[in-house]
Length: 211
Image (cartoon, rainbow, N blue to C red; front, side, top):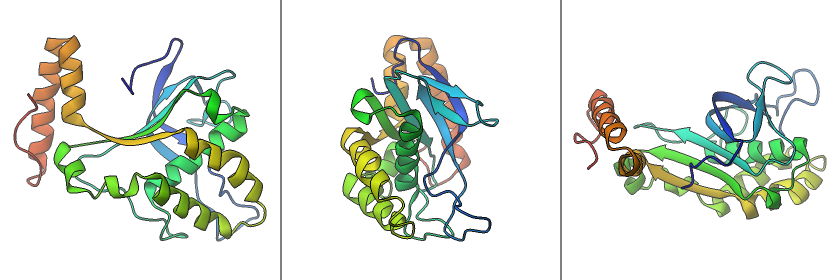
């Protein structure tokens, strides 16, 4: 399963991922802040540089970032880069994390960005439209242009290989709950009940729990 833990892996919620588009000088208008990851699974350390900062451990074989949605879409851009959407930004931060750890993407067999969302949101296409390598590549390369030629080597040696190695995919809450229920029926049932209550908070959401 894409969310299975490798031996020695752990998880963390609301970690901060480093960005390649950090400020190069005080007041740099091109810059952005670090990205909050809803969840990380893998061989990671938290807080080595600052509270909440994520870093890969030496020899890491797993680095999976999850973005959790209910009925909100992936964001379409940032203040300084309107076309730089949330999926592209997260993949760029994953590449930067690998770069800082000097961990080649091809040596991390479990490398992924997984967007968890209700099945009806996935079927609607608003989430999946941003989860393809062409869209991510175009958005990140366009963002990097304002930092050229400084990031040209990073694009070639880290972002490109990361994009070649990474899995970028949606995964429905309903499917995850079914997967859990297939292993632990009680836990699956409790999560299905909780999920049903969550969907009722938003009237546009599905009104039945997954079977």
